[in-house]
Length: 516
Image (tube, rainbow, N blue to C red; front, side):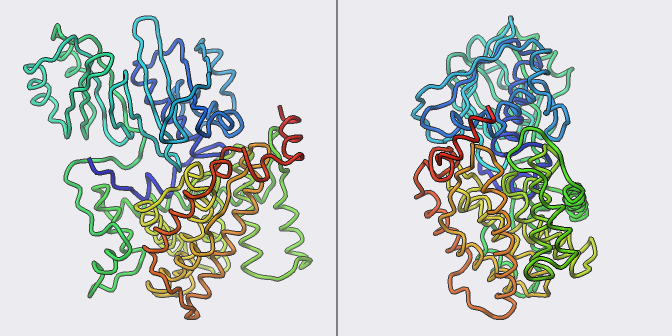
């Protein structure tokens, strides 16, 4: 099964609360699917994190506990109940035990969870793969691939049964049906529609069936068989566009429509909804935010005041970008609602400059939506060759990617051509190689704020350079490949483990101890 990224699944979203999409939103999605696997009843959860990974040092400070436990309770990623996750999990009577063990795992964000409810026990292995994306890779030690983009029916059986498999194929018309053998035998069925209660009752009549669970999708754009995309790379897009002369946002529209099997009107409508949430995040941040458990206070209102009094260096769009980027990051740090684009930790790097440029240039909402679609398509090209996970490639995967995406959007808003948007993106990514992820006190606040601002200002400079005809020299696809190689070459200590860089300074450790 080929997994094709979607703008709304993988790049611009999810809409969420919390400091980190890799930790909060992803963990919540894992928790939601675990809850479904247990038919909404969890009494005990034993959670193990690998000592070779990143979660041992970050699951508390970056919100994995908050997300996972809230997912066990069935909450949405933007629910205010996330703020009360400890109280909520205690009220629900779910016993949680956390341990650290050597896994020898490949991915740094690996969850191993044993679940019990008195009548059924089950174990899963799950990954947070960046930007809120997840994958359950194991159930009862059998390999699976559940990414939250299908309706998944899991049927535990006493023994292999060809007649039952034939019955299920005819009854449910699945896209895929797998028989898995781990500690127990089960059938994993993927369908594009929910399996109805009546169908479940029919299946239960088979004496070979021991247990049935339905895992609902957690992603907004669903998968299906037979997806045919117009292109998957920048070079492929340019070839596809020969003789069509479509703008970058129009090409994004064609891609996402094909990927999701949805209309262009629906794509535009969803991006409009997202842009309005971004706008609201800016306005919320500018009013000032309060939250007790944070490193940095609300700082953007004073920046705004000094800007208006013309007491800051420079003038115009660059300062407005700094202001909006700061405001969004402060909303994130105060547990307000933001759009993770490309991630929560880098949520100011795209929304800040694009919303600021739209306001500064008096652009309509329609133009802002088109610019954000352009940014989203650049994100697709990045994901097809790289990652948005700082745990895999440092902060360049988050803020660096954000800069490349925002640069293309700004070039569009500035009247640049398709070629100039691609050049701007190439330049911005070239400037982002080697960005470390070393959060102070393990929190996704500092130096994250400064890196978001740096990414946003980098995007502006590169958009202007591209419009002015500066040469980018290396095609975007090649830049992304080199970008990925450089990021994965960073030592583990500088890839969101809080084990190197600023994270281990005396002052950072002192702040961390005070916060505990």
